Length: 384
Image (tube, rainbow, N blue to C red; front, side, top):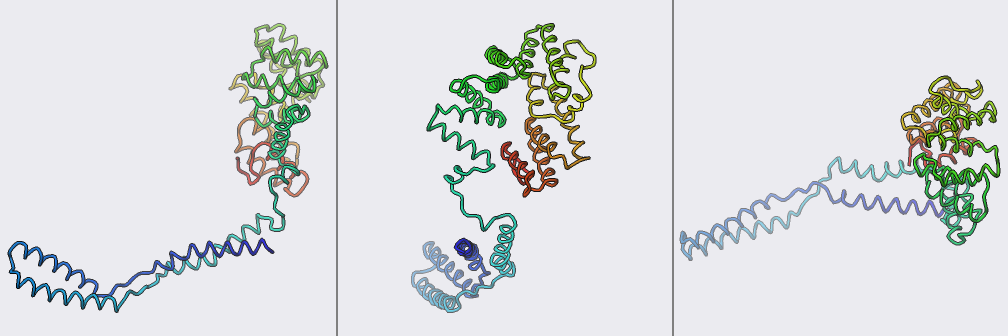
């Protein structure tokens, strides 16, 4: 109840501020004698000039001045007695009516449609304590904790992949480095650290990234991510034969439906100088169903080839979603894919379409909204 009292008070105050100038802005009708006053004043000035120029004697000037002054006083008294009359204009009245009735009604309707009058206030402290699905609040909460305790390895471990997915690559690199220092090496941390270094270098597998990847393979010899980037490093160094062997080894050890096979086979094809990539039908089907890892792994390709390949994959998925809009995983993937490509407008449009198929009040819709928050997309279909 207090909320509505405050809203009513503020609305009345704003309306009063807007109405005051309109109430004062009527058409003012002056008395007819006001023009005579100006004429008599001009006559007095002209009389002074004539006397100074010797055109009239002093005695005649005094007589004329007295007569003009008498008429001026009479005209001034008539103006004061008549005053001014304010004639409100029709447009003025319509504006007043709009302020009093239309604006509060429109504001109330918009609030009832988009607002939540029964939700209690949520100050920053309580939002940090209960962030829900708000990714920005989760990040802020973790960062605040790390300021207090910079040796919290678990905090760095949680933040590192979030930074990477959010495009904060330098922050991701530092977070992975701290997590490795405090918690020790694991294939996930080493692989994430290497990917961050590669992203920072514009797709070049640096020596520091290779060292991290080799450590990852020493812990988990069948880690496909480490195998892929090390093979890519060989290709970048011009060791085509060794790179071809490394990529073929990945194909041989990967499941037929592994999502990274299309990209690996593209490298094999380029190293062989043409020909058809070696892949199964199941792997080929993945071209129309890319994951974020598929897209991130293409960072080593030239800009034109990478864009053409990824957009072809995403376009295929978009066609599938038109035919089957109830594919929830498809909406999640295409929204993230568009965001990774930098097409925030397309990502926002895909979000809007996904929410049409999976309303925001459902579990799937809430997941779409959480993803939108993570990627910096507005839930009304725009981009931040």
